Image 1 (cartoon, one colour):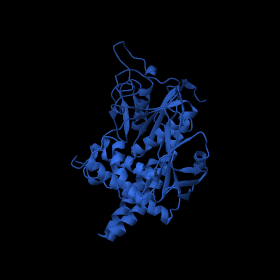
Image 2 (spheres, helix red, strand yellow):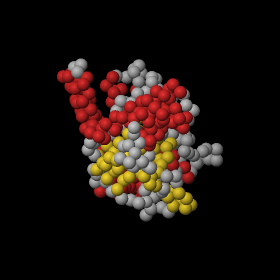
Image 3 (cartoon, one colour):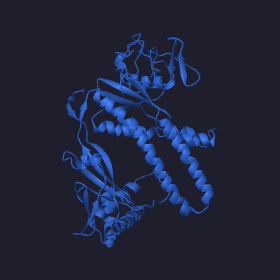
Length: 408
């Protein structure tokens, strides 16, 4: 049963971007190209004029952008995009947009079921027939959703939808440990599961890595042909990878909502700095680890959970794979990703142990300390040596099991 709303309060609006396929007409392709040129002009004006705000850039660039003869909303959107690009202090050279696209605010377009109307010049419009399934119509036909900006490329139309959701007080938490070839999940209600679908993702990436190497060998220096072919295989790789990740993340979020549980994950920032050139690692290993998709899984879980009101927080990953979740003592590494706790005389699976320690970050009240001078693991991820026993889990339950007591 779903938990009640926490204090009757509402969380800030949550936003979801939904992508629709469509067929671009020659008129629309020309419009996309003109908007790209407008953005590049606005970027150059921003680099020269150095505006202090977006409105200053509009005053500087508007006379130049009106020469294109498009609707005034295009000039305003181009200035908004150009200012955000100019404010990016991490750029190493003058930015330049290469792919045609356009972006409009919610006051510029009209959406009627699956028919989108956008302006070109004043009092003239282009109509786009969107392609989608029943999933897409749940957004277009829902009057309770607020429509945001629209972004159009040669292949897709992305519309932002927002709503307010009720935050609920979780009755427990789910700890999620994301690895290269699996996702391990442990919950305070005793459920423990492992999703091995990521092994297929790793194999897919290795397969397409070999395909790209063969293409480079066969085509040689013809960049025009290789770019087209590599883009085709890149889209295939992405669609097949994303599909497998959606299966995992949906099951995790649905289980959390059905049982009133919050979600906790590791805050894995800067982890790819460990796999840079010069760190003493092989080229193949660095290439494999730099294509690790942990952030995409976390992103999917986060936006899906927030859309339905499931609380999501991140904890410090330090020490999640080094200490026993039962007694807090240091574990000993064994072969085949196994860990052994000498104090408890118990063998753990490394991934399941990490997921339970992440869950322990979320429920410090379930870990009674052995003395008044000892703290408990908190949201900062610290791991003092305190005892922890989950509420409702029998001592006979082995966390190394690969199957869940409940379907997640």
